[in-house]
Image (cartoon, rainbow, N blue to C red):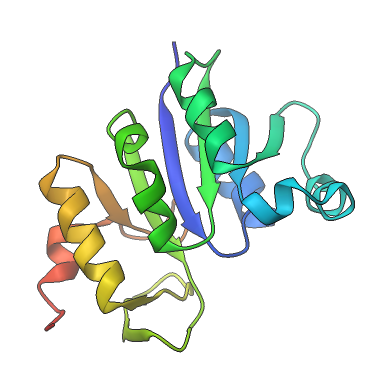
Length: 165
């Protein structure tokens, strides 16, 4: 029996995921969730090139991700999605996650808050993102702002104290 983790990272799968997160969380399976990427085999193969063969890995749609969440993994699994609002599509599944990591999200037109603090990461959030994080936290989902495993892990309630809506 393994644990499920989810990370928000607008780059999805990249070196930091494989070299840092997978090792720190003892991941056996990486699941990138992105409807558009899941329908493009060429881009999928490019993204998957840097993943060592010892990790099971796939790119799936949100519907496919729900099915994977419903199955027991053979070890720890890391689900990765691009944007904070993607979490709204996975509310029930997030209840099964050990931790949801708020990682990297580039500045977008609707973003108002820079949640970046230490670790060299960048995370911008909109008012809607903040409200969603509040709702998820209230529902009992463990949200941690953390860029890489060797930087400080800041629980969402701590991060939230510095945000004025």
